[in-house]
Length: 112
Image (tube, rainbow, N blue to C red; front, top):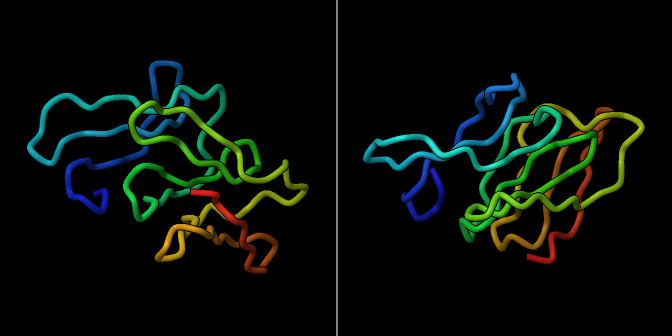
């Protein structure tokens, strides 16, 4: 659930079998496909503290999707060693994003 408690995000395959992010209201209703990527999301995800972004691994890069538009922005270049499928984690102020890769902890600024 986002920090405001208004949307629940989950991973599910689309009609083409690609793992995407989906949203649904806590009150129920029809799920809404948020992302429309050409390849699978490769990790668990996490909400930015503002509730405006979700972070995850896509195309061996750290990415964020805007929670309303679904627009994906990459925060890192393609990694030779894919980041771990564990969830990426935002700092409490949302300025940093951490993930595991090759047994090491990595961080990057989010500009969010």
